[in-house]
Image (cartoon, rainbow, N blue to C red; front, top):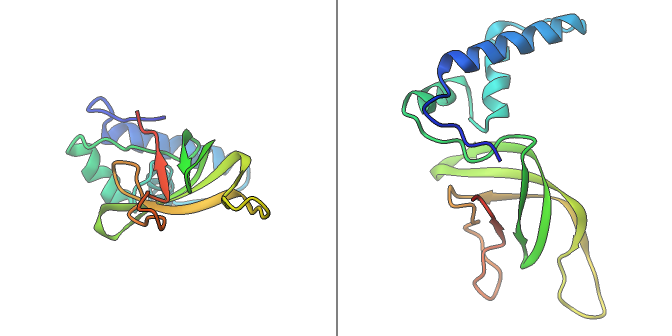
Amino acid sequence: MNTYTESTLVADYKAQAKRLRAKLYESGTVVSHSDALEMVASQHGARDWNTLSARSLRNEPSVLAIGDRVSGRYLSQPFVGRVLGIRQVNGGQMRVTLHFDEAVDVVTFDSFSSFRQRVTAEIGKDGRSLRKTSDGVPQMVLNLE
């Protein structure tokens, strides 16, 4: 998992955007520098470039990034997978989309199964969803250590 510290500066993100823009240009796609900055911000789980820039200046860690390997529990079932998408939502929550390496059976009833391999959940900075199952357990718990 990526955790960015004070050594990650705004200049590093700008350089990453410049490399991204050059690579896209080589493949025939022209994007503006500001669009490349927005793409970099999205890859690092920020809502937009201004959010990423401000977070980096305040040395706030980014807990997750697109492509990170993660593990945890979804509807009480263990999983290992990859982060496909991150979007900041209101209240400091993140909407994450995960693709599990192996599908997880989300039904505990013996004579019925329902497998999920790609899920989306809203989680807090602690990696726990606010939404809970009927027995009070968070629907998703990510291991963020």
